[in-house]
Image (cartoon, rainbow, N blue to C red):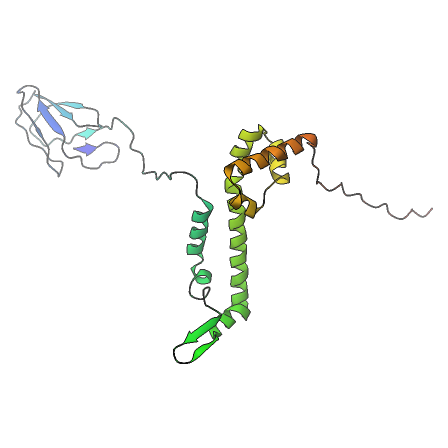
Amino acid sequence: MFDKGTGARIAEVNVLNTSTGKSGYNNLQAEYHIDARIGDVLIFTKQNYFADTVKVKDYSSLAVYLNRSAIQLQQVNVQAGPITPEQRLAATKRDYTKIYGLLGDKDLLSVSPGEGAGISIDALYNMFSREGRNAEKLRQTIQNDYYQNVIDYRFNRALVTRITGLNDPQLTEFMRRYRPGYYFVIASSEYDFVASIKANYRRYLRRPKTAYTLPPLVTPAGPPANK
């Protein structure tokens, strides 16, 4: 027995001889044996496959190919909910293990048994070498990105739309103009956070046009042409 789509062997297929009423299953190697005579009708059935009917014409081996009754989809991993800023930061740290590993976590103050405290040479190298400075800059960039992700996670378009009813382009302009700071986002309660959006929305309605857009650049006139 074979899958007609993939050619793979199929086990546990039921084989029924309608002439004798006898039936049985094929083995794990997809092979089957059943008593039959020329002219007998065999029916092959298996769950998730269309049944197939074959009439015995001779006593030679018979290969049967079954069609699936449904398309088998590839495995899809579904994640429960959006990725939180903390999960994203943890994934970033795993990607940059060098700057968050032993080199990145060296303490400036080192303590040796029996010798007291001193300045860690590794920490000084990490602070003042080009590699160390670049690593520190990257860590600061990643940390700043984390702060912005925290803001985006709470101050999101779905929430602001639900509270204000705004849609683009007004929604984008409102969120750009009244984007909250990181410390307010993490410290405010749900009530205070929603109240802040509502208050800013009232301000926005009073001045719906961009309040902080720079005036258009005026190209200075050139010197008068010589006549």
